[in-house]
Amino acid sequence: LAVEAWGLKNCTQKEEWFSDTVTAVLVPPYIDSSEIVKRGWKRYNLSLGLGLNKVAGKVFRIGHLGNLNELQLLGCLAGVEMILKDVGYPVKLGSGVAAASAYLQNNIPMIPSRI
Picture 1: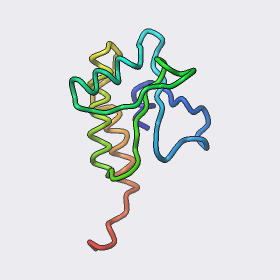
Picture 2: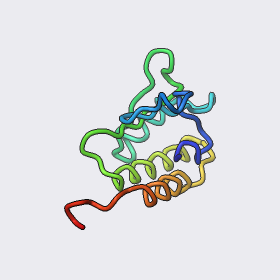
Picture 3: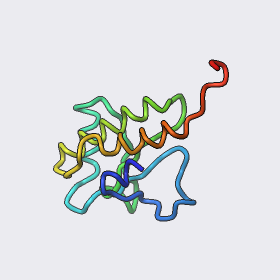
Picture 4: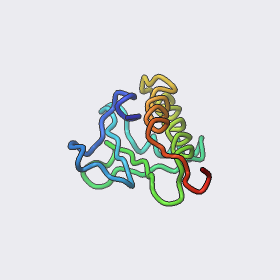
């Protein structure tokens, strides 16, 4: 939902192929995705993945696996939005975070041990 709110597309074209662990985001042809990854690391201490092989320079990857909770993911999305703005993509700051937040708020169950 965040990728869609940014006006970008998931590299995986069919929703049934979407991954539970990584999202590869296609960037417009005027942006080199390796610049997004470099900027994330050097300016925001955010580690994103490069596009590999045929999609090198065309996608960046957001990992969402392991010891990661929903609020940490929202922080990552906020960082990606700032990076996209830095590299000249006309993203509205907060758009992807808002889309993801709305989804998460309506779909995250209460933590069973805390009820």
